[in-house]
Each structure stands twice: as structure tokens, then as C-alpha cells.
Image (cartoon, rainbow, N blue to C red; front, side, top):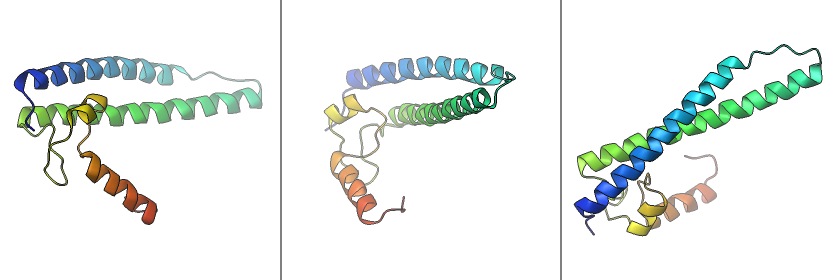
Length: 124
């Protein structure tokens, strides 16, 4: 199945909008992390603030990974590889792409990968 130019353009616009929103969100999170240098009289308050900061850093890192995936999906559109499975080369279903446009695996290859992860924990 080849994705029409019109649908590719729809995917591109969705990816660009999501990327722009995520960049703004990351900018705000980064500013907040740099701004959160409070001093605390109480050790419990300080521990709580450090836990909150660790969670914020983790979420920021996750968002940065998502931003990378969005950029890679846009590059695949430009290269004409969007919608093709990186493992088997078959087409990724349109429904799967609509649900997760950054995906690089068809449902069968993704299921195989997940199955291998369960059989061999610790392998990536």
C-alpha cells in the first residue's frame, strides 16, 4: 500500500504541529527546571522538591526522545520511506500510522520484537 501525497501531507502537518507544541512545552519545562533553585528550611521539603525535580527531568528526557522520533518521522516522509517497516519493508497499516505516526515497525514486526523481549529480558 502506497500512501497518497495528500495523506502524506496530512501526516506531515500533524507531525509538525505536534513537534512545535512539544518544543514549546520543552522550553517551558527547561526554564522551570533552571528556575527551581529554592532553599528549604526543612529536609522533608527539600527531599520532596528533589523528587519532583527528578520526575520533571525524567519527563523532559521522555519528551526529548519523542521530539527525536517526530523529527525522524518527518525525515522519513521527505525520503519517501514513511509508512514502510524498517524490519521487513512491508507497508505499515494506515490505522497504525494514524494512531502512532512515529512508528517504524508494522504490527507483525512489533509483535515479534515484543515477543523476543519477553523471551529474552534484558536484550534490546
